[in-house]
Length: 408
Image 1 (cartoon, one colour):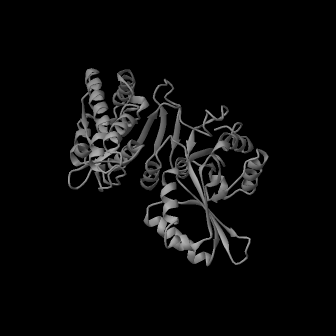
Image 2: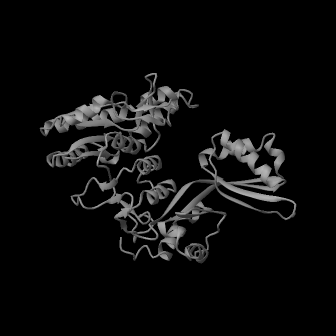
Image 3: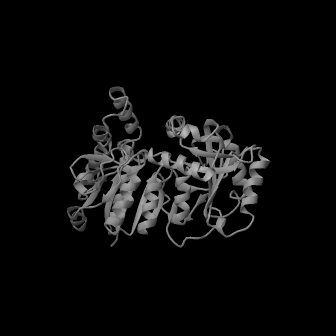
Protein backbone atom coordinates (compact mmCIF):
# COMPACT_ATOMS: atom_id res chain seq x y z
CA UNK A 1 0.00 0.00 0.00
CA UNK A 2 1.26 3.46 -0.91
CA UNK A 3 0.12 7.01 -0.44
CA UNK A 4 -0.41 8.82 -3.72
CA UNK A 5 -1.39 12.41 -4.41
CA UNK A 6 -3.41 12.88 -7.60
CA UNK A 7 -3.90 16.41 -8.90
CA UNK A 8 -6.52 17.29 -11.51
CA UNK A 9 -6.33 20.66 -13.27
CA UNK A 10 -9.04 22.95 -14.60
CA UNK A 11 -9.44 21.31 -18.01
CA UNK A 12 -9.58 17.91 -16.32
CA UNK A 13 -12.42 19.10 -14.06
CA UNK A 14 -14.25 21.38 -16.48
CA UNK A 15 -17.67 19.72 -16.08
CA UNK A 16 -19.39 16.70 -14.54
CA UNK A 17 -18.36 14.40 -17.39
CA UNK A 18 -14.71 15.35 -16.86
CA UNK A 19 -15.06 14.86 -13.10
CA UNK A 20 -16.39 11.37 -13.78
CA UNK A 21 -13.15 10.55 -15.61
CA UNK A 22 -11.16 11.88 -12.65
CA UNK A 23 -13.21 9.72 -10.28
CA UNK A 24 -12.41 6.65 -12.38
CA UNK A 25 -8.68 7.37 -12.15
CA UNK A 26 -9.02 7.62 -8.37
CA UNK A 27 -11.08 4.41 -8.20
CA UNK A 28 -8.34 2.54 -10.07
CA UNK A 29 -5.74 3.51 -7.48
CA UNK A 30 -8.08 2.80 -4.55
CA UNK A 31 -8.78 -0.66 -5.98
CA UNK A 32 -5.02 -1.24 -6.10
CA UNK A 33 -4.97 -0.69 -2.32
CA UNK A 34 -3.46 2.78 -2.19
CA UNK A 35 -4.33 5.68 0.12
CA UNK A 36 -5.39 8.57 -2.09
CA UNK A 37 -5.35 12.31 -1.61
CA UNK A 38 -6.75 14.17 -4.62
CA UNK A 39 -6.16 17.88 -5.30
CA UNK A 40 -8.56 19.72 -7.60
CA UNK A 41 -8.46 23.03 -9.42
CA UNK A 42 -11.44 25.20 -10.29
CA UNK A 43 -13.30 24.36 -13.51
CA UNK A 44 -11.54 25.73 -16.58
CA UNK A 45 -12.40 29.38 -17.12
CA UNK A 46 -13.99 29.98 -13.73
CA UNK A 47 -11.00 31.78 -12.19
CA UNK A 48 -10.87 34.12 -15.20
CA UNK A 49 -14.59 34.80 -14.87
CA UNK A 50 -14.27 35.55 -11.16
CA UNK A 51 -11.27 37.81 -11.80
CA UNK A 52 -13.23 39.72 -14.43
CA UNK A 53 -16.15 40.28 -12.08
CA UNK A 54 -13.84 41.49 -9.32
CA UNK A 55 -12.03 43.92 -11.62
CA UNK A 56 -15.34 45.66 -12.31
CA UNK A 57 -15.82 46.32 -8.61
CA UNK A 58 -12.19 46.76 -7.59
CA UNK A 59 -10.24 47.92 -10.67
CA UNK A 60 -7.24 49.05 -8.61
CA UNK A 61 -6.91 45.73 -6.79
CA UNK A 62 -7.13 47.28 -3.35
CA UNK A 63 -8.90 44.36 -1.68
CA UNK A 64 -6.55 41.45 -2.24
CA UNK A 65 -7.64 39.66 0.94
CA UNK A 66 -11.27 39.57 -0.19
CA UNK A 67 -10.19 38.72 -3.74
CA UNK A 68 -8.71 35.50 -2.36
CA UNK A 69 -12.05 34.66 -0.74
CA UNK A 70 -13.70 34.96 -4.15
CA UNK A 71 -10.99 33.17 -6.14
CA UNK A 72 -10.89 30.20 -3.78
CA UNK A 73 -14.54 29.34 -4.39
CA UNK A 74 -14.06 27.48 -7.68
CA UNK A 75 -11.93 24.76 -6.13
CA UNK A 76 -14.51 24.22 -3.38
CA UNK A 77 -17.19 23.58 -6.00
CA UNK A 78 -15.12 20.91 -7.74
CA UNK A 79 -14.02 19.28 -4.48
CA UNK A 80 -17.61 18.79 -3.35
CA UNK A 81 -18.78 17.52 -6.73
CA UNK A 82 -15.91 15.04 -7.00
CA UNK A 83 -16.66 13.65 -3.53
CA UNK A 84 -20.30 13.13 -4.55
CA UNK A 85 -19.16 11.08 -7.56
CA UNK A 86 -16.73 9.01 -5.49
CA UNK A 87 -19.42 8.19 -2.94
CA UNK A 88 -21.80 7.14 -5.71
CA UNK A 89 -19.09 4.73 -6.86
CA UNK A 90 -18.99 3.16 -3.40
CA UNK A 91 -15.89 4.84 -2.00
CA UNK A 92 -15.43 6.66 1.27
CA UNK A 93 -14.54 10.28 0.52
CA UNK A 94 -14.72 13.79 1.95
CA UNK A 95 -13.63 17.22 0.83
CA UNK A 96 -11.07 19.41 2.60
CA UNK A 97 -10.56 23.12 2.07
CA UNK A 98 -7.07 24.53 2.42
CA UNK A 99 -7.73 25.84 5.92
CA UNK A 100 -9.27 22.54 7.04
CA UNK A 101 -6.26 20.59 5.79
CA UNK A 102 -3.75 22.83 7.54
CA UNK A 103 -2.25 24.53 4.47
CA UNK A 104 -0.69 27.38 6.46
CA UNK A 105 0.68 30.37 4.53
CA UNK A 106 2.01 33.87 4.98
CA UNK A 107 -0.30 36.84 4.35
CA UNK A 108 0.85 37.70 0.81
CA UNK A 109 -2.65 37.60 -0.62
CA UNK A 110 -2.75 36.47 -4.23
CA UNK A 111 0.82 35.10 -4.12
CA UNK A 112 0.96 33.40 -0.73
CA UNK A 113 3.92 31.26 0.30
CA UNK A 114 3.29 27.94 1.98
CA UNK A 115 4.68 27.45 5.48
CA UNK A 116 3.08 24.13 6.48
CA UNK A 117 0.88 21.50 4.86
CA UNK A 118 -1.40 18.68 6.03
CA UNK A 119 -2.90 18.68 9.51
CA UNK A 120 -2.83 15.56 11.73
CA UNK A 121 -6.57 15.21 11.15
CA UNK A 122 -6.01 15.07 7.39
CA UNK A 123 -3.42 12.31 7.74
CA UNK A 124 -5.63 10.32 10.12
CA UNK A 125 -8.45 10.48 7.60
CA UNK A 126 -6.20 8.91 4.95
CA UNK A 127 -5.35 6.01 7.27
CA UNK A 128 -9.03 5.05 7.48
CA UNK A 129 -9.14 4.52 3.71
CA UNK A 130 -11.17 7.65 3.08
CA UNK A 131 -10.25 9.48 -0.14
CA UNK A 132 -9.32 13.05 0.81
CA UNK A 133 -10.20 15.62 -1.85
CA UNK A 134 -8.32 18.88 -1.22
CA UNK A 135 -9.07 22.26 -2.74
CA UNK A 136 -5.92 23.31 -4.55
CA UNK A 137 -4.47 26.79 -4.95
CA UNK A 138 -5.35 27.98 -1.43
CA UNK A 139 -4.39 28.07 2.21
CA UNK A 140 -4.93 30.10 5.35
CA UNK A 141 -2.94 32.62 7.37
CA UNK A 142 -2.19 32.29 11.07
CA UNK A 143 -5.04 34.77 11.59
CA UNK A 144 -7.52 32.57 9.74
CA UNK A 145 -7.69 34.49 6.46
CA UNK A 146 -8.00 32.59 3.17
CA UNK A 147 -5.06 33.02 0.77
CA UNK A 148 -4.29 31.86 -2.76
CA UNK A 149 -0.97 30.89 -4.36
CA UNK A 150 -1.30 32.55 -7.78
CA UNK A 151 -2.03 30.99 -11.15
CA UNK A 152 -1.01 27.33 -11.31
CA UNK A 153 -1.02 27.17 -7.53
CA UNK A 154 -2.83 23.83 -7.42
CA UNK A 155 0.41 22.19 -8.60
CA UNK A 156 2.10 23.67 -5.54
CA UNK A 157 -0.70 22.40 -3.29
CA UNK A 158 -0.28 18.89 -4.67
CA UNK A 159 3.50 18.71 -4.33
CA UNK A 160 3.44 20.28 -0.85
CA UNK A 161 0.82 17.78 0.25
CA UNK A 162 2.82 14.89 -1.19
CA UNK A 163 5.88 16.01 0.78
CA UNK A 164 3.90 16.52 3.99
CA UNK A 165 2.23 13.09 3.99
CA UNK A 166 5.30 11.22 2.68
CA UNK A 167 3.54 10.18 -0.50
CA UNK A 168 5.23 7.73 -2.81
CA UNK A 169 4.63 10.12 -5.70
CA UNK A 170 2.56 13.02 -6.96
CA UNK A 171 0.60 12.42 -10.18
CA UNK A 172 -0.37 15.56 -12.11
CA UNK A 173 -3.25 14.84 -14.50
CA UNK A 174 -3.69 17.26 -17.38
CA UNK A 175 -5.20 17.54 -20.86
CA UNK A 176 -1.91 16.79 -22.66
CA UNK A 177 0.06 13.58 -22.90
CA UNK A 178 3.01 14.86 -20.86
CA UNK A 179 6.06 17.06 -21.36
CA UNK A 180 7.18 17.50 -24.96
CA UNK A 181 10.48 18.58 -26.51
CA UNK A 182 8.69 21.75 -27.68
CA UNK A 183 5.20 23.18 -27.93
CA UNK A 184 3.47 20.78 -30.39
CA UNK A 185 1.33 23.63 -31.72
CA UNK A 186 4.52 25.26 -32.98
CA UNK A 187 6.57 22.12 -33.72
CA UNK A 188 4.34 19.24 -34.88
CA UNK A 189 7.38 16.93 -34.78
CA UNK A 190 7.87 17.50 -31.03
CA UNK A 191 8.34 14.26 -29.09
CA UNK A 192 6.99 13.19 -25.73
CA UNK A 193 9.75 13.16 -23.11
CA UNK A 194 9.27 10.06 -20.99
CA UNK A 195 11.78 10.90 -18.24
CA UNK A 196 13.17 14.16 -16.85
CA UNK A 197 15.42 15.20 -14.01
CA UNK A 198 13.86 17.58 -11.47
CA UNK A 199 16.42 20.23 -12.42
CA UNK A 200 15.59 19.98 -16.12
CA UNK A 201 11.88 20.30 -15.41
CA UNK A 202 12.54 23.34 -13.23
CA UNK A 203 14.39 25.08 -16.05
CA UNK A 204 11.63 24.19 -18.52
CA UNK A 205 8.92 25.46 -16.17
CA UNK A 206 10.85 28.63 -15.29
CA UNK A 207 11.40 29.45 -18.95
CA UNK A 208 7.89 29.15 -20.28
CA UNK A 209 6.73 25.53 -20.27
CA UNK A 210 3.20 25.62 -18.85
CA UNK A 211 2.86 21.97 -17.86
CA UNK A 212 3.93 22.53 -14.24
CA UNK A 213 4.19 25.61 -12.04
CA UNK A 214 7.86 26.44 -11.37
CA UNK A 215 7.25 26.84 -7.61
CA UNK A 216 5.84 23.31 -7.53
CA UNK A 217 8.91 21.94 -9.30
CA UNK A 218 11.20 23.84 -6.92
CA UNK A 219 9.47 22.19 -3.98
CA UNK A 220 9.55 18.76 -5.63
CA UNK A 221 13.30 19.17 -6.13
CA UNK A 222 13.89 20.36 -2.56
CA UNK A 223 11.79 17.59 -1.01
CA UNK A 224 12.76 14.86 -3.53
CA UNK A 225 9.11 14.23 -4.45
CA UNK A 226 8.75 12.02 -7.55
CA UNK A 227 6.24 13.53 -9.98
CA UNK A 228 4.43 12.10 -12.97
CA UNK A 229 2.62 14.18 -15.60
CA UNK A 230 -0.21 12.06 -16.99
CA UNK A 231 -3.01 12.51 -19.55
CA UNK A 232 -6.46 12.64 -17.96
CA UNK A 233 -8.39 11.67 -21.05
CA UNK A 234 -6.34 8.71 -22.24
CA UNK A 235 -6.63 5.00 -21.53
CA UNK A 236 -2.86 4.64 -21.92
CA UNK A 237 -1.85 4.70 -18.24
CA UNK A 238 1.79 4.12 -19.21
CA UNK A 239 1.95 7.41 -21.10
CA UNK A 240 3.16 10.65 -19.60
CA UNK A 241 6.41 12.00 -18.21
CA UNK A 242 8.22 10.80 -15.10
CA UNK A 243 10.12 13.48 -13.16
CA UNK A 244 12.66 12.53 -10.51
CA UNK A 245 16.30 12.47 -9.52
CA UNK A 246 18.82 10.31 -11.32
CA UNK A 247 16.86 10.29 -14.57
CA UNK A 248 19.66 11.60 -16.77
CA UNK A 249 18.82 10.10 -20.14
CA UNK A 250 19.48 12.84 -22.71
CA UNK A 251 21.73 15.82 -23.38
CA UNK A 252 19.00 18.28 -24.42
CA UNK A 253 15.49 17.82 -23.10
CA UNK A 254 13.57 20.53 -24.91
CA UNK A 255 13.04 24.00 -26.31
CA UNK A 256 10.73 26.36 -24.48
CA UNK A 257 9.69 29.99 -24.68
CA UNK A 258 8.03 32.82 -22.77
CA UNK A 259 6.28 35.74 -24.39
CA UNK A 260 6.03 37.62 -21.11
CA UNK A 261 9.15 39.69 -21.71
CA UNK A 262 10.21 43.28 -22.29
CA UNK A 263 13.62 44.85 -22.88
CA UNK A 264 15.20 47.88 -21.23
CA UNK A 265 18.42 49.40 -22.55
CA UNK A 266 20.33 51.98 -20.50
CA UNK A 267 23.09 53.69 -22.46
CA UNK A 268 25.90 55.93 -21.31
CA UNK A 269 26.46 54.64 -17.77
CA UNK A 270 29.33 56.03 -15.71
CA UNK A 271 31.03 54.05 -12.94
CA UNK A 272 29.28 50.97 -14.26
CA UNK A 273 29.73 48.65 -11.27
CA UNK A 274 28.36 51.18 -8.80
CA UNK A 275 25.59 52.27 -11.16
CA UNK A 276 24.43 48.72 -11.95
CA UNK A 277 24.32 47.89 -8.25
CA UNK A 278 22.17 50.95 -7.58
CA UNK A 279 19.80 50.17 -10.47
CA UNK A 280 19.25 46.55 -9.55
CA UNK A 281 19.01 47.28 -5.85
CA UNK A 282 16.15 49.71 -6.49
CA UNK A 283 14.42 47.29 -8.88
CA UNK A 284 14.68 44.53 -6.29
CA UNK A 285 13.16 46.75 -3.60
CA UNK A 286 10.23 47.33 -5.95
CA UNK A 287 9.97 43.53 -6.43
CA UNK A 288 10.74 43.82 -10.15
CA UNK A 289 12.60 40.75 -11.38
CA UNK A 290 15.25 41.09 -14.08
CA UNK A 291 16.94 38.59 -16.36
CA UNK A 292 19.08 38.40 -19.51
CA UNK A 293 21.67 40.98 -18.43
CA UNK A 294 24.17 42.23 -20.98
CA UNK A 295 26.85 44.79 -20.12
CA UNK A 296 28.93 46.25 -22.90
CA UNK A 297 31.02 49.26 -23.94
CA UNK A 298 29.42 52.42 -25.33
CA UNK A 299 30.73 54.57 -28.16
CA UNK A 300 32.55 56.60 -25.55
CA UNK A 301 35.21 54.30 -23.99
CA UNK A 302 34.55 55.91 -20.60
CA UNK A 303 30.90 54.82 -20.64
CA UNK A 304 28.99 51.52 -20.74
CA UNK A 305 25.60 50.22 -21.88
CA UNK A 306 23.33 47.90 -19.90
CA UNK A 307 20.56 45.74 -21.36
CA UNK A 308 18.20 43.56 -19.31
CA UNK A 309 14.73 42.03 -19.47
CA UNK A 310 11.71 42.30 -17.21
CA UNK A 311 8.27 40.76 -17.42
CA UNK A 312 5.68 42.73 -19.38
CA UNK A 313 3.68 43.06 -16.19
CA UNK A 314 6.58 44.94 -14.60
CA UNK A 315 7.57 46.88 -17.73
CA UNK A 316 5.79 50.19 -16.99
CA UNK A 317 6.73 50.14 -13.30
CA UNK A 318 10.39 49.57 -14.18
CA UNK A 319 10.44 52.48 -16.62
CA UNK A 320 8.72 54.79 -14.13
CA UNK A 321 11.25 53.86 -11.46
CA UNK A 322 14.24 54.34 -13.76
CA UNK A 323 12.88 57.70 -14.96
CA UNK A 324 12.83 59.27 -11.50
CA UNK A 325 15.53 60.61 -9.24
CA UNK A 326 18.07 59.41 -8.38
CA UNK A 327 18.20 56.68 -11.04
CA UNK A 328 17.50 58.97 -14.01
CA UNK A 329 20.84 60.71 -13.40
CA UNK A 330 22.86 57.50 -13.72
CA UNK A 331 22.60 57.09 -17.51
CA UNK A 332 22.31 59.19 -20.68
CA UNK A 333 19.40 57.46 -22.44
CA UNK A 334 16.70 54.87 -21.76
CA UNK A 335 15.27 52.76 -24.59
CA UNK A 336 12.54 50.18 -24.03
CA UNK A 337 10.68 47.62 -26.09
CA UNK A 338 7.71 45.76 -24.67
CA UNK A 339 6.93 43.01 -27.20
CA UNK A 340 9.85 40.70 -26.53
CA UNK A 341 10.16 36.98 -25.82
CA UNK A 342 12.67 34.55 -24.37
CA UNK A 343 13.52 31.30 -26.13
CA UNK A 344 15.55 28.67 -24.30
CA UNK A 345 17.20 25.31 -24.82
CA UNK A 346 17.25 23.16 -21.68
CA UNK A 347 19.24 20.02 -20.91
CA UNK A 348 21.74 18.34 -18.64
CA UNK A 349 24.25 18.14 -21.47
CA UNK A 350 24.62 21.91 -21.72
CA UNK A 351 27.00 21.95 -18.77
CA UNK A 352 29.30 19.22 -20.03
CA UNK A 353 29.18 19.06 -23.82
CA UNK A 354 31.21 21.29 -26.10
CA UNK A 355 29.56 22.83 -29.14
CA UNK A 356 26.14 23.41 -27.55
CA UNK A 357 26.52 27.19 -27.66
CA UNK A 358 27.69 27.10 -31.25
CA UNK A 359 24.65 25.03 -32.25
CA UNK A 360 22.33 27.44 -30.43
CA UNK A 361 23.66 30.63 -32.02
CA UNK A 362 24.14 29.08 -35.47
CA UNK A 363 20.52 27.90 -35.51
CA UNK A 364 19.18 31.35 -34.67
CA UNK A 365 21.51 33.05 -37.13
CA UNK A 366 20.43 30.69 -39.92
CA UNK A 367 16.80 31.60 -39.20
CA UNK A 368 17.66 35.32 -39.26
CA UNK A 369 16.71 35.72 -35.61
CA UNK A 370 18.09 38.89 -34.02
CA UNK A 371 19.33 38.37 -30.45
CA UNK A 372 19.05 41.26 -28.02
CA UNK A 373 20.49 39.55 -24.95
CA UNK A 374 21.68 36.13 -23.77
CA UNK A 375 21.60 34.30 -20.44
CA UNK A 376 23.17 30.94 -19.61
CA UNK A 377 23.29 28.51 -16.73
CA UNK A 378 24.47 24.93 -16.31
CA UNK A 379 21.13 23.72 -17.67
CA UNK A 380 19.97 26.33 -20.18
CA UNK A 381 20.88 28.82 -22.89
CA UNK A 382 18.35 31.61 -23.41
CA UNK A 383 18.06 34.43 -25.91
CA UNK A 384 15.90 37.55 -25.79
CA UNK A 385 14.27 38.05 -29.18
CA UNK A 386 11.33 39.87 -30.77
CA UNK A 387 7.99 38.29 -29.96
CA UNK A 388 7.15 37.94 -33.66
CA UNK A 389 10.17 35.64 -34.13
CA UNK A 390 9.26 33.08 -31.44
CA UNK A 391 7.79 30.39 -33.68
CA UNK A 392 10.70 30.45 -36.14
CA UNK A 393 13.22 30.40 -33.29
CA UNK A 394 11.60 27.42 -31.56
CA UNK A 395 11.43 25.44 -34.79
CA UNK A 396 15.03 26.29 -35.72
CA UNK A 397 16.41 25.23 -32.32
CA UNK A 398 14.30 22.07 -32.18
CA UNK A 399 15.66 21.00 -35.58
CA UNK A 400 19.24 22.06 -34.83
CA UNK A 401 19.41 19.92 -31.69
CA UNK A 402 17.75 17.00 -33.53
CA UNK A 403 14.98 16.76 -30.97
CA UNK A 404 12.59 15.57 -33.65
CA UNK A 405 14.78 12.52 -34.24
CA UNK A 406 16.11 11.54 -30.84
CA UNK A 407 14.26 8.74 -29.07
CA UNK A 408 12.85 9.70 -25.66
